[in-house]
Length: 191
Image 1 (cartoon, rainbow, N blue to C red):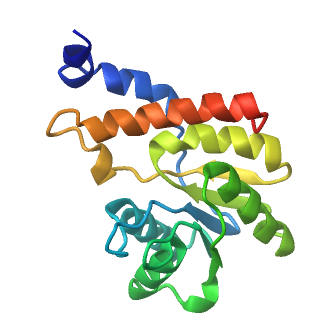
Image 2 (cartoon, rainbow, N blue to C red; image 1 turned 60 degrees about the vertical axis):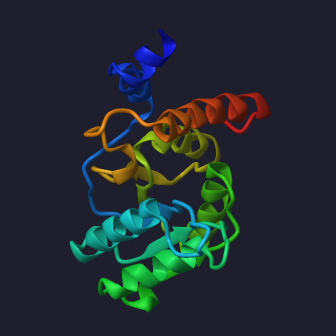
C-alpha cells in the first residue's frame, strides 16, 4: 500500500508542496545560486546546469548585476566553478561572478554567501536553488540572514522533479531528505 501511495498517486507531490516557496523575480543586488552537485565524472549534473542557466537568464534580463555561485562540493572539479564556466558560456562576464567554494550544506551556503553579501554591502538577493530546497533555505536565512531581503526564485521546471514519467525513487529520497534536513536543522538549533 505504501508503494502504491508513494509511486502511483500524487501523494508525494502533496507532501512536497509545503517545501516550495516561489516568488516572481524582482530587481536585486545579486543572484545567489546554491550548487546542485557534481557527477562522478566531475562534469556538472543536470541541476547544476539548470541553476547556472536560470541565473544567467535572470542576470541577462537585468534582475541583478552580480551572481554568487555557492558550493564547496567537488569531485574532479568544484560545483561553483562549473556553474561559473557554464554561465560565462551563456554570456555572463567573469567580472560579475563571485565564487563561494566552501559550502557543503544549505546552512553553509547561507553562512558563506552572507559573508560575501555583507563584504560588498549587498542587502537584496534572488535565491536560485531547487524548489523543494527553498523552505529549508528560508528557515536558515530567517535565522542567519538578518538584514538581507531574499526573493525565492527556484528553477521553474527542474528535470529532476519532472512528473511526466511518474514518481521515481530518487525524487522520493530528495523530498524525504529535505524534511529530514529541516528536522535535523531544528534539532541542532540552526533554524
